[in-house]
Each structure stands twice: as C-alpha cells, then as structure tokens.
Length: 248
Image (cartoon, rainbow, N blue to C red; front, top):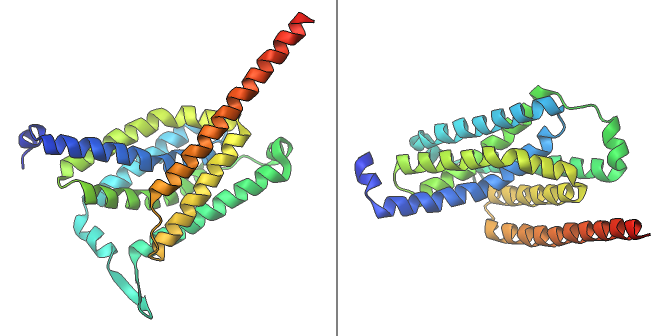
C-alpha cells in the first residue's frame, strides 16, 4: 500500500491513533526513569541528557522496526532449561527488569536513609554514566514498544509516525515531569515504586509470566490521584495558615 493510499485509509488513521496513544502510555516508564536519573546531573546538563536519552530511544525503536526479520528471531528460543525455552527477548526483559528493580531499590534506600541531607552529600552523577543507564533502559523499553507496534499496525509508515509522535510528546513532557518530581519528594517515591513494579513485570515477562500492564497503570494512576489530593490539601492548609498569620 502506497503512502497516498494509507493517507486515504480510515483503518490506517485508526491504527495510527491507537498506536500513538499506546506508545505514549508505554513511554511513561521511560519518562519517569529519565526524570529520576537526569535529576542527579547539574542543572545545565539535565535538558541535554533528556534530549540525548529520547534521541537514543527513537533511534533504537526505528532500528528495531526496520529489522523485522531479526526481531522475529528474538522471540525464538536459543536454548532450553528443561521444557523452558529461553529467547533473546526473555534475556533482555529479565535483566532489564532486574536493573530497574536494583535502580529503584537503591534510589528508595537513598531517599529514606538521609533525605535532603543525604542527597546534599552525594556526588553528582557523571554525564556519561547517566547516559549509559538511559541506554540500557531504552533498549528494554524499545523492544517492548516495537513488539507492541508490530502487533497492532500492519504498515511500517504507520508505526514510524506513531513512534515519532510518542517521542515528540515525551520530549515535551520530560522537562516538566522531571521538575515536578524533583520538587516533590513524595512524588519521587511514588515514581520509584512505579519503576519497581515495572521492573517486576519485565522480569515476569522474561520468565513467560505476563502481568497485564493495565493493572500496573491502574494501580499507579490511583496512587497518583491520591497523592494529588494530598498535595492540594497541603497547599490549602498552607494558604489557610498564611491567611491566619496575616489576620493576627
């Protein structure tokens, strides 16, 4: 099917809309991870690190997308442990999930161990090390994203446009999300808990035990709603206290 035929096809537009939304939702994991790891950098390096991280994600997803024959081989077992077949996809998801669990656990420990005083004593992460971490997670999330795209859309141009839309939205949202997470420690803890859940889900996928992402997103969405109410309540209490002080 040519580009003109795709542009005139309602089915292609429906696939594009569905896939773009799903790619953006799947990209939430990536935005949260980017926000947390780049906030360890000096202020003047954070935006550049987020841009490089999302550029790497775009390159990785497009490269996988244009290597469909290679992608199909990733899901075939390369060896067996008893009756359990292990593929490259299983290996990537398992170790990527394990890395997310490790990273989220370490960050939670640092937050609980000393709070602001502890963070002030921690040396800022190097730019290269942050990009290295982003590359690892990009590889895992890109594999998950492209497999989803292939399962929904039939045409490469539709997949490419959906991925470009998702990366553009992520690039626009990454800065505000990072700033918001940095300003609110409780939100950061919630984000780390979300990464921990995603890590567990990836490890489970690597072991052929699929946990529907909808369950994870619903749980984290409910938690975010509760945290938003807490933030509004705290702001209202602060404003009331300021008005009381002025009244006195």
